[in-house]
Image (tube, rainbow, N blue to C red):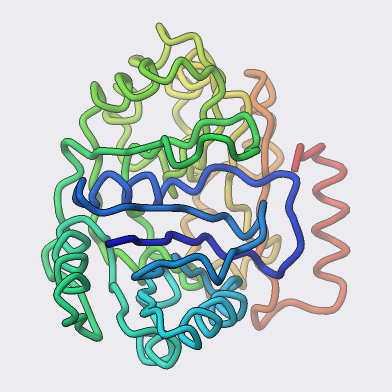
Length: 324
């Protein structure tokens, strides 16, 4: 049996800044060794629709859904079954099933080997999902599928999944609910050491899930002498010692969700806790004092936004010297 993994793009144009899609390294490691696998990244290369394959698997975000459905249609016209997983199919399985033979809801661990067996036997089920999310202990990755592809020189690493906050606009809480899972830190360190890569991107939605765990992670990263980027919630700025450790461990850029400059919007999007922290200017200065650049994100379209909300956010971003 042969399985073709595909990472869809927004469109059919090439991207110059694509990074390794970690999900396919996980899927490759979960695939039985007697199954042939191939991987195409729609951001980097054309998709050879006529190459023989027995199953196509796509990971789909909402912003890539339209392109994913186009790709699926090409294969289904050639009588190749398609399976979809990821955020969009998990949250909109009925829609995704109009374009695929099977949909995976939630995480693939604990599901993918069974799905492959069903595909081999010609008995794919429409939906695959598990009520109990699997532990991340012993997470395996097969990065060989990324070889010979021209990705940005950054290593994608995952420490944990989920976020302790339930912001109104965010898909993370909708996907994982209140589940918070972390890998053993020694496994994360071993993964980084094994590759020898010196620039790491943590794909976690919030590395600051727990102060104690964050401190343990930062301490473990110090001896690796790496530089890294990750996402943290704004409240980490209240812990000066943790910020110091974060910088010492090699963090050069952090993404924080600022979301809105309007207090009413923050309350509506269930981020009223932002108002209990230092003001944004003070928070930003704390990061900059430690040599950490900031990637600031905003959400527009809440009830108290006016046409000048974007202009005000832009002025704030320029005045605050946000890196991104």
